[in-house]
Image 1: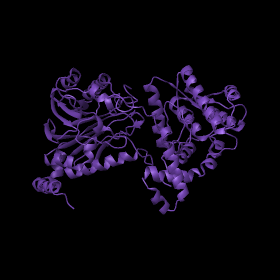
Image 2 (image 1 turned 135 degrees about the vertical axis):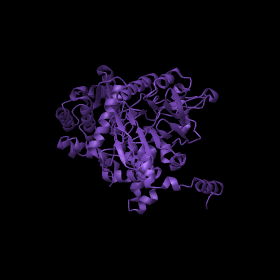
Image 3 (image 1 turned 90 degrees about the vertical axis):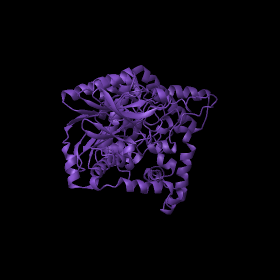
Image 4 (image 1 turned 90 degrees about the horizontal axis):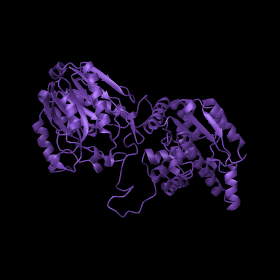
Length: 284
Length: 272
């Protein structure tokens, strides 16, 4: 399969303009004969929304704007980030990402871990999601994570235990630390996590971060794809917008799982029982 | 000292920040006060690289002929960078004001001058359709070494997250004229004033303490145990505490359900 990563800079709070950007990139992905195009976290709205959350929130099933993406997803699957508010949950705004394919929304993931410290204010404005799950796609099973979700390794474990072939982590990660390396120091942290999670999961990890700046915060870019052996298949630039296209050999998951038998020998039942004990009786 | 920066990368981030932020608000040009010192020279150099020298205007605003060497240094920076520079003497308005409101308080006089320069920058900002670049570094912001509504006022600040010692590293990388790199930092409020004499610490000492407090989250006790002078540690903490008002919008007395600054919260870059 051919995958495309859209390392873009959305305009803050301007959904219509960002929709145009999405449609543009979808055309570009089609020309490149990509099967899947992945946008970063909150790609339709921008990240630092604060009280704008309620003004840009939409229901992906009924929003005419969102439907323009869904309608164009035949032959090109898309992962896009948006602020979600469903008719049955009025006033609750979720930081969500949808996997869209063949004219349908296959899955919506709502960010579970909302960073609220220092420059992050998500739990102040957003409602938390409550679930991690894998879902079938034309390219095998996939799982979606949003930014901070990816740094809580239990989240990836659930997707792995659920049989995912591909973990797609979309992100709006700010760059921090300028001590060296021709990129923000925080970028290396994401790469390390990507390599480790791909290796542990014997699955592809697709990490798509955004660029541009909002209110003085520069988003670091540095999107990447790791293969099921934990090695980088491609890395995008830091800071610059980029459209990264590469071919993934889906058979690599099978190869990795035949070579390293973690998946076959995994014992989620024991992990679950142990976790239940930890949750019920905190260790002293 | 672990405040070493990757200067070429910092230049990349900051020039992009200046370019993007101006473009978001529909500006092509940047304007700033050129004092002849290091911080404004670094800002001007970043702006020249971000926007092109022709799109940067440096205002040199002496008060009469008090500091001729600083005016010469500022002009030298302007020439070296190829930016537009203009000298505006603020003595007429300063002298007129203090003729009517006489004082020997040099701090009041200095702050008045800093605010006069701010007022001129904002007028020129409108006149030139140019956004004002702030030049206060992280060290100054943290200890409150600046005049509120004076040199602290700006539209965007590219250097506010760089300690003074880091601004120096960036200045060397940007190839600023040697005399600018060497001269002792001064607020220029009165003759013979230097930052380090007034603060009572060198910037190296000050930045070490600030790094411990801000970057590493060390307590005063930790720092004193590590051999930093107790008086210096306490003095820096006190400067930080006393100057919080300079880093904030003023508190608004809350009455309604939703109040500006408290719970009516929109991003600066809204729709940009």
